[in-house]
Length: 267
Image 1 (cartoon, rainbow, N blue to C red):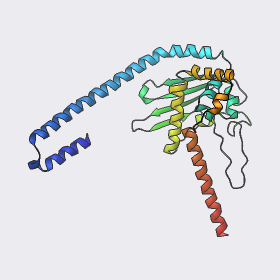
Image 2: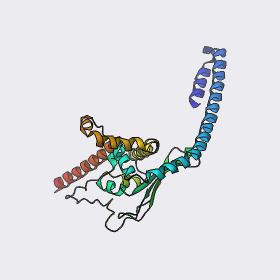
Image 3: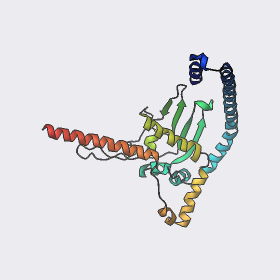
Image 4: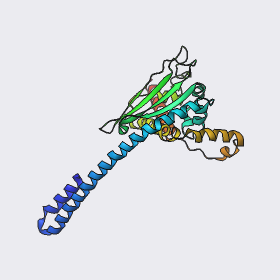
């Protein structure tokens, strides 16, 4: 709208060079465009109303699906491990913990455009006290996303993080294990790249894995039947979030190397 007005002003700066009928046509065109914008806004509101209605219809079906999934050993573990991107986030310790994952739920906020919550339900396990971990994404009016998550109450000796500890090598940082649970319970509002990682992983769970986990669980079964020969021939692309994590690790290592070099020169 601002751009359209500026065009209108430019046309009126030299009235002797502008046809009055042209100005009238542009003004009418703007009125038409404003009407379309109003219709589009109304359509968006109607779509949200329908989405909210069908979320209520889907809920008992999802609940029934979850009850059946609970009877299938390691269902969610196998579904995650078969997902070409999400599997990259499950380290060895995550996989041990996921054997206790009984159900996964994704629930939109009452106003679906304002966000959603991902919930992991666990059976009693030797790793942490919690039976439920949740991560909520709330979309704010100014276009930002607020992220909240359940902090894990680790049992003694199990929380550095997910039971994985690395020794520091001199002045070098300890290597960071990519971990699904570390991501899930992290809600710090960091830079844009890391927020993009949060968004990408969450959307893959919400729109892909949660939508039809049976596809990925069946892929796991097919891999066991046919072996890994075909998979070995595939070219695996590095997921976006792993590239960003690796880039940040390299940047921090480079900064530490520069600091060490400066110290040596100073001495």
